[in-house]
Image (tube, rainbow, N blue to C red; front, side, top):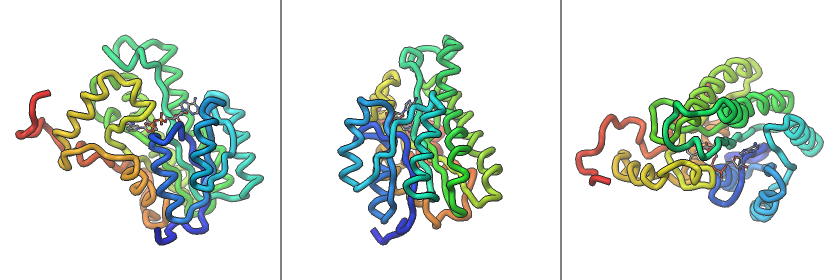
Length: 264
Ligand code: NAD
């Protein structure tokens, strides 16, 4: 790297394992000289996150389960003790009951609807609010979304509704934090085989469909999402906020099945 992120520090929430999109982002940031702190959700993931953090010389800052706001408070309290001020926050967190990521959206339960919105949407706002006093001018907040926010995708269901609300949250937060020169953006990533994605019905079919129909005729990697995140988290994007950047091999521009795509 060329040290694009030299002297910058930040928190990444959402590394579960080495297939996580957050891990792709972590690697890209550290390669450009950033200092990062990682959170983990519960002891099972702590054991996975610790060796990954060691690989990058990253700090494991603590447990964060966004359904327990005290854990968000604790994590940013620890970050403040460690560094004082920071320059970026990455939110790569989503959850829905996998029983509702298949079949018809209309069958979504109230309980899972609220839980999905709490973990996948409200958490960004809660984190932004807690992080705001620590964020230097020029800081950048990034979250992860999916095209299911814009168009109906099979099985994405309540998560699509949540991602639409998440993208709207990005715009509202961009206005609220903009006067402090803090930016808020999202990457809309194409489908990638991760732990979270394994809960989505027929995910392999979705991957294959993207390979056949995206302009680049392939899916994207966590490293590619990481490199685009680098842009949104660095000064290179200092004029960009409230934006949803598609990192999806161009899939979102396509209106119809490719003429050369085989039937699957
Ligand atoms: P992942 O399973 O690696 O990461 C999901 C993370 O969410 C995990 O680290 C998990 O611990 C965390 N999480 C879930 N519930 C939580 C809670 N209550 N408190 C704190 N953390 C919690 O999967 P991923 O695909 O890397 O997901 C990261 C983000 O990327 C998600 O927002 C996801 O919707 C989004 N995304 C994924 C894809 C894809 O195809 N994989 C595409 C577009 C967007």
